[in-house]
Amino acid sequence: MEKIRISAVSYLNSLPFVYGLNHSALKNECDISLDIPSVCAEKLISGKVDIGLIPVAAISQVTHANIISDYCIGANGKVRTVCLFSEVPLNEIKTILLDYQSRTSVMLVKILAKEYWKINPEFVNAEVGFEQNIKGTTAAVVIGDRTFSLSFGEGRGEAFDLSEEWKNFTGLPFVFACWVANKNLPAKFITDFNNALKNGLDNIDKTLEEFPPSIISKAEAKKYLTENISYELDEEKKRAMKLFIAFADKNHY
Image (cartoon, rainbow, N blue to C red; front, side):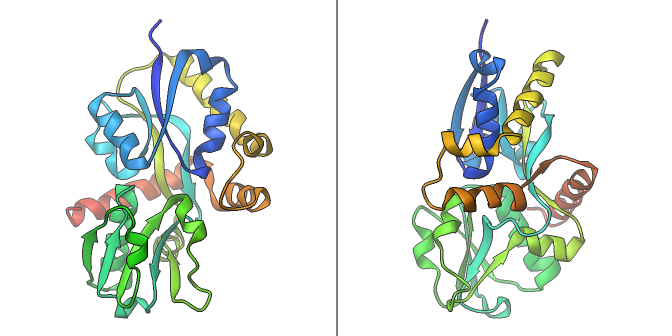
């Protein structure tokens, strides 16, 4: 039987999902690749994979898109790994460099800038190594594990947590990525898939043994996975997704 091709995010926050899939009966039915979020989206949109853990902002670009899981990458308040880093206060920012790794975070910062912060900076699409250009009135959105090594708020400017800012603005959690398929899949597979994801979330300690973090300690990684990331795609998160998409459509992002 042809294997189901899956693209999962290569960040720390998705590793419990990968652990769960690798330790399930689905392991032999699936071909799993680890990619940055923008590549996950590109692979699903182009049909290179059948399932992707893709940025919410990219779902509308997927033909026959179907959210197949009760789990996601989300946060209810501070997420830590999606931030606007700046040496100056918000009202002094002139330019914001946009991380190339995820469209959702790019759209989120634009929404917050216009609707909540009431600022009008120049937005610039960034390339590899852009983190080195955060200085003066040039700020940057940085996502993923790279944020753990950026020291802001320690005598050097601020790190504005975009999920926390969204929560302050809307009172809602935020969803960064969902499990989406581009074809109809058997009901049994979807059930087994969700059970595998749940098993990974129930075994965070084992996940960190199999995938030891390189930038932060295991204790800090566990705290991040259990306190900052909120994995259940519940009704409140679904409302947040609809509001986010409504803002994006309103502003043609």
